[in-house]
Amino acid sequence: MNTQTPWAYTETVKDHFFSPRNFLRDGENFDSDGTGVVGSPACGDVMMVAIQVRDNRVAACRWRTFGCASAIASTSMMSVMATEDGGMPLTRAKRIKPEEILERLGGLPERKFHCSVLGQEALREAVLDYEASHE
Ligand code: FES
Image (cartoon, rainbow, N blue to C red; front, side, top):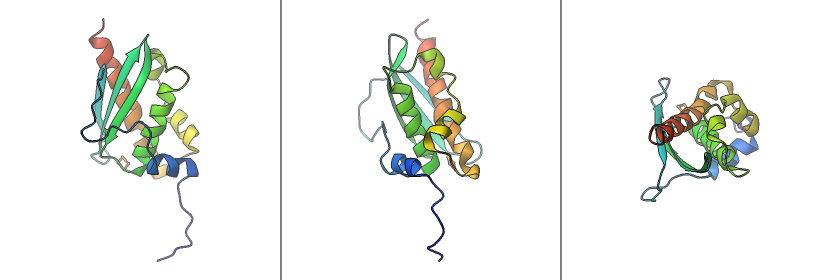
């Protein structure tokens, strides 16, 4: 095995993979205002995002997934972006782009780009779920 091959992930990706932020652990209670679940047709992975909403902002964002390291790092970063600076407005949270997450991560290997959409799509579904019950 060639141990000289450079690691393909940025330090930020590794940090969020090894220490995922806002991960919802087994048995942990989270009183969600909206929940979204999506799957990736490319690999069959599933992502769940749950949010708490205050004043039309994302007050808390928790998630769990069967996805790979890139999906974990991307969703961890997405959850940070959604909740920083007092919480992202819901109108903005619905439109967060994978490119924005990739930029904060310092990039992903090209074959892993599709993993970064899982968390963002599940977040949008969670916001829509919240809005459907608060019209
Ligand atoms: S989420 Fe399926 S390969 Fe990354």
